[in-house]
Length: 245
Length: 245
Image (cartoon, rainbow over all chains, first blue to last red; front, side, top):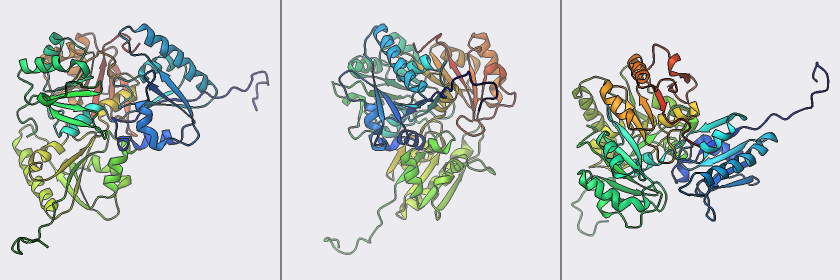
């Protein structure tokens, strides 16, 4: 149909790379948009630790289409960045091949795609060549606050998200300058974090939340947190005496 | 049916007070749970500024049941807290009367209920007497990042939410200690914030996002932000050079 001759071969329009947040764990905390895109997907991709089930896929299991091609993206969790970067390079190439064939890829993300997720590493590799769209999701700090019934922020308050991997001095300086905080990825750092919060007189009102919004959710005052906290646990610190009145 | 005599009058079980996040603006960014609870509600409540339509109700308009009782909660936006507190006292009493009649109340919240919302003021007044449940929602920082295609946080990064109402010294100290930040409720503070971010050499990569995820959404580099920024606008500051690789 081209008016300028037939020498240009017909090329398929590339697919769109979707990063879709599936929320913190409860499948009902997926957005309507996430459920629609996942339910209509031809090709799904999702992150998984080697040898483990994908949490993002488990959350979305109820809305998966019957016939769908699946790309499992395995990324090693190592202190060095190089192995993860190599895995993302390989994964981006697999996804690019699907997109080049004209099919969309829906990448499932626990929580929100741009909040401590795998998606952003793939987006960084693919966004220059392909159309990408991010569907935000409910993030775990909001699910943790909902579970504990505690406010994250009101009026002029500052809210900070702090990874548990920071050292005590870094955590202390940042905790001093916010009104509420969520410390993420608690896991094995729990005893150290508890001691730090006690030394700042912030422990008494801190809440420990494990697997927020999931059936296996645990909420306890920090003093009663289990010794074997999993990676997907957080500590909610609300400093204000009565911050929402 | 009571075995201990008939003198205790039959009392209805009180209703549940639900705080339901409807997300940042796009109706499809409501969660499945929010849509289910709203669609089945007998009594809906929502915040509104005096004389204005309720944004939370507008977001949920597509899933409202046909016959539903509506409680419009008007709260004045004033610098003093007393007028707002009086309005919340009155509103809590109206909601309590419905809950005492045995009916649930579904309170609609823009974004997430515990993240700068009206719900927490009502929850503080009602949680002691009634069963409350919070359904978290997609918050505007996540919607803003999705719109801009920029990461909020990766790996060991610190993410902070800063109200635009803080003074320059307070903002400067907190911006210095995070890797990314969202400055909320920009509105009339835009020129001052732009000057501050320029002085910290953070302006060049900052993005201005207005009404994230809505049909009227605006995204621009901060330098090109409009002079008349509305209240529902934010500035996304991502400091890392290439934070997600």
